[in-house]
Every structure is written in C-alpha cells, then in structure tokens.
Image (cartoon, rainbow, N blue to C red):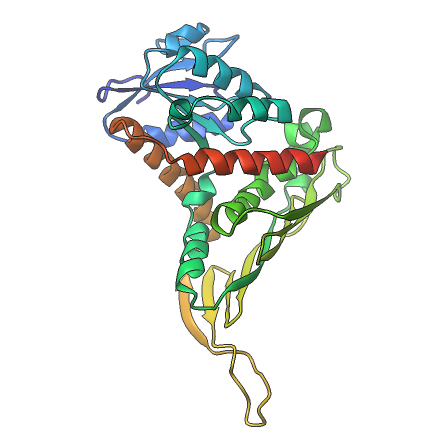
Length: 326
C-alpha cells in the first residue's frame, strides 16, 4: 500500500499521470522500499505523502521523474544542483537540443546516479539482438525490419487525448512507440550513421502524426521501423544475417539457417527452421518496464554506480529524435 513503511529506501515521485500510476503499481510489489513523497506542482495527489513543496523530495534515496516530457529538463537541472541521491527519468529525456547539450556537461559523478528509462533495453528483443550479435548463429546481422501497429487512432477516445493534438505532441508516434525500437538498434547494434524519418497522418483523426517510417543505417546494418496507430494490430520483427534469419511473429520466435541450403538442382531454397520458441509481444512492455525498475532500485539499494553507457546512449537516442523532428 502506498505510503506504508517497508524499509529504509525512500522513493520520491514527480508526476501522477497514467504512466506514473503504472510505475507505482509495479513498485508497490517490491520489497524494502517506501514511496515517501509524490510531488505535483499544483495539487495534492494523495493525502499524507502528496506535496507541492519540491524540497520535500530531497530526503529520498531516489527520485523518479514521471512528469510530461517538456518538464524533464527543469527537474533534472534542479535536482542535479540540489540533490545527491539517484534520479530515474522517463524518456524522452528532453525536447530541445540546447537542453541536451547542458545535460552532457554535468559531472561524471552525477551521470553515474542518473538513469534514463529506455526500458526496451531490458526486453527479450534486446536479449535476442545482443545474443545474435555475439553468437552469430545467423552470421553477421545485416538488416532488421520492425513493424508495430494497432488501431488506436480510430477509437473514440483518441480525439480527446493528448496524442491526437499536435500542440501537445505533434510527433507522438515517434516519441511514444518508434523510440523504443530506434533506441534498441542504437544500443545493441551500433551508432547511427544515417537516418530518415517519414511521419504521416493516416487516420485523419486529430492533427498529430499517427504513423511513421524510420530508416536507420549503422556501419554494417540497415533497419526499417514502421509504427502506426492507424493500422490493424501487427507485431513483427525480422532479423536477417549472412547465414540465416530470425522471425518474430504470431507469438513465435523462429530461426532459419544455414544460408547454403539447396534443392536437388543446386538452387537456393528456404533454410530449415532450427529453433522455435514462444514469444509474447503483449508481455514485452510490462516485463521490460519491471526489469528496468528492478535494475534501478537494486542500484539504489546497493549504492552502486549506473553504467555510463546508459547515460551516453540515452543522449545519443534523444539527439537523434530531436534532429529527426527538425
């Protein structure tokens, strides 16, 4: 139950929207923590632990920034100057390049206590990309195709939500959905050398983009990411290597290899399937979110440093996102 003392690790939270509620519901199941304060600038969201005084957060062991995207920089800046504990911040980190440049200049000690929640880094998809990059069962990865779509833009409630309003977030399909996969490629495959972003409004509902295609090129791998709120439900990933390929679709992950598979006449044919296992796309988001929070809370409890790779790759992903929009 929120506010009940479970241990010595006190957590402060900034924000109390739908995503904050989701995070809180996960944290409530963790042991030896206490949600100590929830800050909102204008209202008391919960008795006893709700506060409008930002300074009330400072005695917490860690603070989670779960507020709207355009407030992240203000809160990180304030905390980095006045607070010595750990900071968890939702993606996207910031919305402007000058804000990103200022973040890059904070001290290394501060960076080691800031965690940006690109939670798909803790997903099964991330594990697969990392494993295939090292084990090379399908050879060298050369191309990845990702499709993630559903029909949200045709639901009645969509028109009344922030997602359909370009004044609140013109690029919501990029910031909310495509960002997960873009970051995965950068985090597991390598730095992006070339990128293109093609946003569209397909549903004609609202005036914010509901569909986008993103193309990425690293030194050796090309990627196409297609995301939409205006299509049927589709979740598919294809990872193509020099000696085989992996498909993830219809709740199955299948691996096919070797490349040199021939018919009796010596012509190339589809390689045999050598692996087949269940894969539930529906569980991916919440599972990765829970693992991401577990990593952060474990770091706080054990007073460890956060891997600087998290900070550096998060900066790179956010910079790429901002540049695409421009």
